[in-house]
Image 1 (cartoon, rainbow, N blue to C red):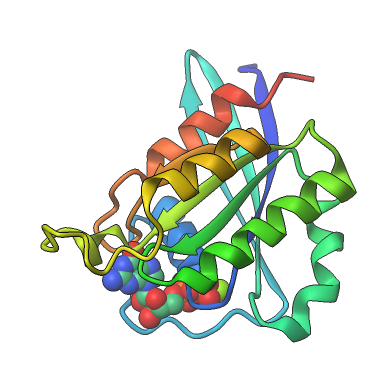
Image 2 (cartoon, rainbow, N blue to C red):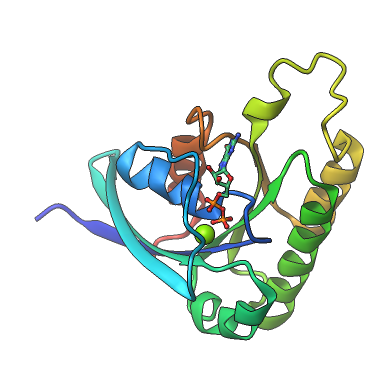
Length: 176
Ligand code: GDP
Ligand code: MG
């Protein structure tokens, strides 16, 4: 049989930053302009093959609303990887992402592989002056260096970098 590596991934971040859309793009290569909000959490799986190995992602897509925040530890407790998502046009969503990263490191330690994802890059593509970019590069870079994060700029809408995020997690999460 072909060896399978199972990676449990949790998605965290403010509501409407595009967590469910990132999962939909990765799992089904699809996008919906009006996605209904996630209630509680959704569970999806996806297999990819890499270097003759099968990597099975078990994905917990959490709801971003504050009222669901107390449930989050249930989903991140046994995760080997986390996608912490913000919207590149929304400054508040970046600070919320920073809070999630700090909570993960405090509660699950530093073995978890965390990818910070700046989503909705398509909204900046025709924005030469980067006027709509909420966070300048040094602020993002500081957080990534301080907290040892992978960083991706992505778009669930166009598919930019979505597959690469998961592929990189597949490389960075150590085999058991
Ligand atoms: P979640 O609450 O974090 O799961 O966010 P959703 O995936 O439900 O997305 C919230 C809204 O943002 C929906 O209307 C999506 O269509 C939209 N959206 C998600 N990703 C993108 C993206 O990459 N670009 C753009 N322009 N819109 C997006
Ligand atoms: Mg959602």
